[in-house]
Image (tube, rainbow, N blue to C red):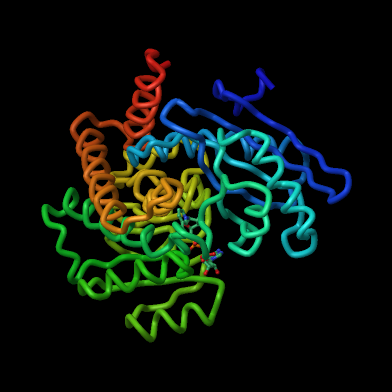
Length: 351
Ligand code: NAD
């Protein structure tokens, strides 16, 4: 563990096995310096135990940074369940996972992530109260996507302000990859502002809905990297900024909801050298976790969520300004600020 390339002084990495239900899960607690670790649960058919561990280690560190940048009283954690979400789900599996979460006595709060939905979390809730993102219950906050999308839209305006001196998006061309829960809402906001949209998805139905509603031009999934646009907004998959796509991009900014957009952190510097301003993914997409934090507090308030989101977008603006004025990649600036916030809370100097 301690030599693992993705190990980043995690406070705890817990492996769980339940013979009866077949549960194999890892809960990684990266940091509780700012509060209980929070981050979703992912169910995925990993190629190996090591791939599963790598995901848990990286994603939990990412959650620490995301929660710190959103100035939430939460640390970072993540859980992964090894299995095929289409075949391997059962009540017994999620209840066993719930008992695993409960055994950490509130050090970690779980919620949905890839492969998991609110009905799965309702089963987890039968065994533990350390669950968020529920549809029902006193503080249930439901689907966080509209809040995430609002943050992404406001973040796109921050990027435009730095690129063009104005956040007026009318006539600006935005290429949106993925028009699912978040992407479709982002398109709605952009269209209202008079932006011209170019969209891609592998779901024809979703494309049709969004193009009818917003007048967006549809392109084939792989062609989205080649379009001439002001801003590229990845709202589908991770690792879309890589050596192959970088040379194709003809945009001035990248600002979207997808997690882990850079295949490796060094891509941030390559974007910068190409003159592309990058809104770090875990900052611009923090709206969803703000919504979850409101639920965890036990006293959900939309005003509180809106206030935190506004502050997060200001923080994004500060990151972009520092990146531009010091010629640094924006992701490196954000990482430094996040590490400092966590280290300050621990009373340590950041490493
Ligand atoms: P979603 O599954 O609702 O939407 C994703 C969309 O991308 C789907 O319509 C899917 O068909 C499409 N897609 C898949 N492969 C594609 C491809 N090759 N090209 C184009 N489109 C493709 O997911 P979502 O909730 O909208 O989340 C989108 C992204 O934002 C994800 O990376 C997610 O991790 C991230 N994110 C979401 C939230 C949230 O609140 N939902 C919060 C933070 C980050």
